Length: 140
Image 1 (cartoon, rainbow, N blue to C red):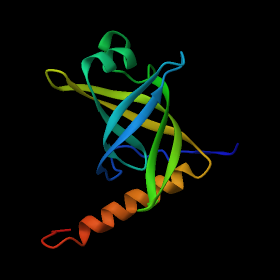
Image 2: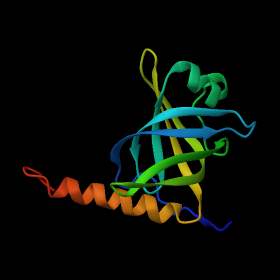
Image 3: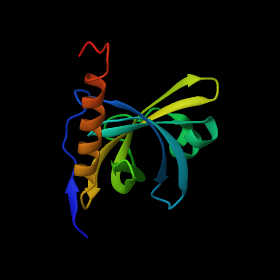
């Protein structure tokens, strides 16, 4: 199995709004399913409820540098509209915040992709950004 390291580049990566499921596996083998709220080449922001965030982030303490929480992720992106591909990526939970009473956002920074995962994400994000620029009334 060949793996590719993620390109290190955080906040300056453009994010695209995406709504899809993502499976997150913790080091203890526990798997949780959440919803992706946005995706970039360097990471993913997920939305989840309090129960899920408690399982992902011990003590619900926001992660801090040097104390990231390692996870493995699995999600799909459409290479072409009728052909989704599965992306397997390792990453670190680097962000957590409450946005409503029972809704949290958790940010995962990718550290490594299996096979062509980075290329699939890169192509998908580029397509969504390009589509957004060509919409009528777009100011990009």
